[in-house]
Image 1 (cartoon, rainbow, N blue to C red):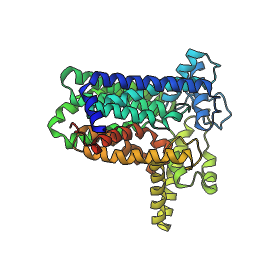
Image 2 (image 1 turned 135 degrees about the vertical axis):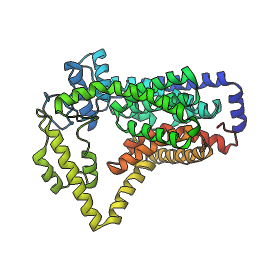
Image 3 (image 1 turned 90 degrees about the horizontal axis):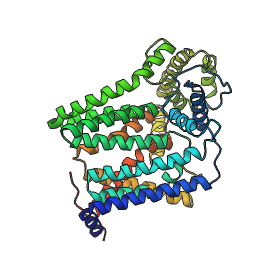
Image 4 (image 1 turned 180 degrees about the vertical axis):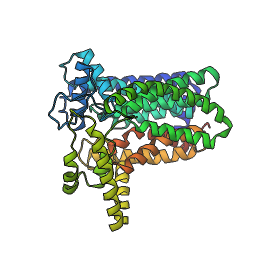
Length: 423
């Protein structure tokens, strides 16, 4: 039955695309309605920091991040975090008015964005396989429960996911196309990559891994990849030049991304700041009127991380490895967000769906393992896992890999149904 449906979809590519587009529109409308009629949640944790920073940026034009627990309202410009998501929020606040509540405004816009992401799944899976693969990916993406909750959170995930999906689309187009179309796709990839790195620096690691894989394993098209990559790199450098110049003026040195890069590593190795660790860091706590202190604090946190890691490795190397491995496995095999607070009832059903997608994705990736485009997509989960295995590993941080999982799961469905796949 599934094979017959796939053959029908492949024989009618335009009808299949219209069905996928209709699914995207229905999902967007439903999510907007839910965002409007659902009582808005209170902002907590990182959401407060992003919201306050975005409002400051919208009102003063100054990017000065402070965590949600900080009460100072007039910090000087800094580079503690990447500015992409606060800038996205600030643009919304400028259009809607400075006093507009974050919710449901952000949820409505991110609901619209989720439709763009879902359409990107169709485009990407169709390019990897066939119209049937694209439609299957669209359906799986529409049915994946966490996508119905994440867009209501004032966090980086939904924006970053959308950017990553369309980076992958432009990258695959650049790989497969020739001449002018490949150059245009490379330029689009450079613009999207710039935006993604401004949101989360992990995007840069993903693209570097993808480029390395292509150059190492697809030597026949190496010159083509180098040309496309050079165009994208030039655009990224041009896009980040204002950030680099700004940071050099503030800190007196080159700051490529953000300043407090060691905090997650220290929190992970010390159990989220044990008492003795916090007492060691406390004298270096950042004064937001003196941004250069951030560099001293970051250096202290790096040193403490090395010392604590060395001590724990000497005392219990197997325990340290198991702690890191366990945290990473939990972040992979559990879903985010989890509004149920556990894995019983609806939470258990959602967890089962999550695990099923992971299993199908393994089948799909294996079926397409010879395709260079698969290496590009797999590089994203590898980058996310590598970064967060070394720092903090939460399911939230690995959530951006789920579009890749869903695309491979769609290919896995077709493979199990014995539908021929296109390399």
